[in-house]
Image 1 (cartoon, rainbow, N blue to C red):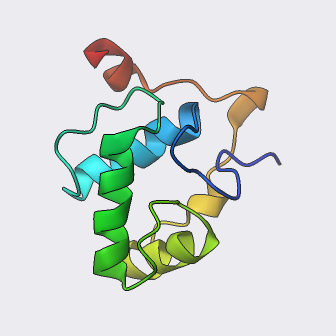
Image 2: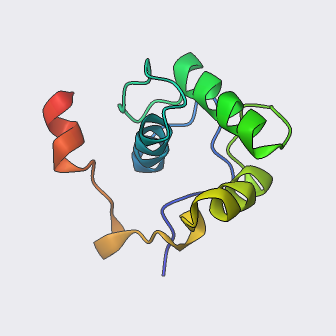
Length: 99
């Protein structure tokens, strides 16, 4: 099964995995200025750094293995287990309506 999340998401990354990350950051109230558009820009990086600060991991702004592991222990959400369905993942309808 192909996974939605690549090993690293960082500034400049694009796609549905970034949308999911952005939605998670918004839900956790890490940065209300994030727009879930699938483009990992400055505001998403700030949200990741704030999350990393709370999780006690290096604040590099990169959503990589250490951050994902700490995120799992904090939230119980296993990012690595989110699959790509039917070979593709689309932007959730609710998000698409706000874009």
